[in-house]
Length: 51
Image (cartoon, one colour):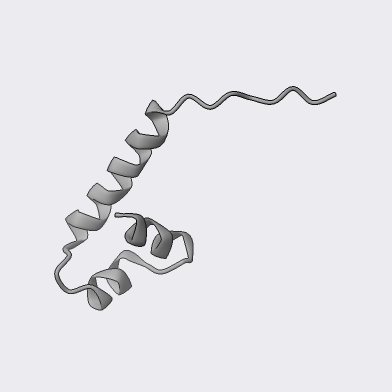
């Protein structure tokens, strides 16, 4: 999943990812994004106060 998200962040399209990683489908790539979004949503990060 992290590889797919990193590829998307680097500007690689879903279709290019599927071509490069043929074991994946378009739905797999979309599901990776959903999973990553949910993982980030569940994390609570403290905010630093700027002086």
